[in-house]
Length: 346
Ligand code: FA5
Image (cartoon, rainbow, N blue to C red; front, side):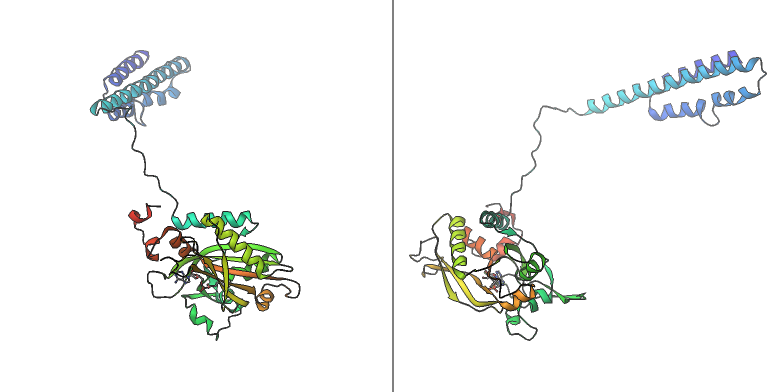
């Protein structure tokens, strides 16, 4: 038995050394240590030996097994190292060559201007709010004093979301403006309030160079005691002057929106010609900019505020149009059509 074990060990170690690949090594492993392997069989028989032989043979067979195991591990490492060397020698690889640098993207002009707008309003104490793009009909229209049969609904035709209804607030639409966030913010935070809401808006419109079905707006809302339109004039003149880094004046014209009373349109003096008249301002010296007005008492009520105690103003301008003006872009569709050649200029 002793001799048999010793010759088995010798034979196994020789075969291990001869194996040239991992798969050949595996075969040897199965031959000796597998379920029906040569050594396994001997180990299995140890229990049947006489009490005299059992301890000695048991010890010896364990030693043999450990030696074979150890050699398997060594040989596996040798083969793996050889294979790696072989792989590397196949192809010359110069580790000192600089890598291929990945193309670096940049912020979209719409986001650049949005960040700038947020920064300026933030400095003036305004918080930045957000609201859902799929909005209930209530917040988009009724809450803003635009009942179902109101003609103002025609001006903001939109997309209705099929099969989606809110128990409390009815059908869902893609919001036509950022104004729904007015009532949402009043409901959530009460008064006083000083917020702007930049966001994506949608309208069912024929597209042309200055109209798209998807565009960005910025809403503003300031609610407090003793607030008047002069505050709006001051804030907007300051905002636009900081944005264009030039002195900019603003003026009001009457305007109509059901959710403000009085309602107005705000123009600002052309930043290109300083009011002298140029192509951008169509030789008027003024650029039409946004709708605004004092928040209608019905809207304050919808927001849960007492209109005898609080009042304020709201405004909404087209961020997309502002970007076009700032960079002299003459077609709104260029901003969202995914043309990288165009976008890389900014
Ligand atoms: C409104 O959307 C009002 N919610 C603004 C407002 C807010 C008034 C608060 C009073 C108080 P209007 O429909 O005019 O208003 O749109 C505002 C701006 O969005 C426009 O001046 C324009 O710059 C931009 N806009 C409107 N429709 C489109 C369009 N189809 N494509 C690109 N920009 C658009």
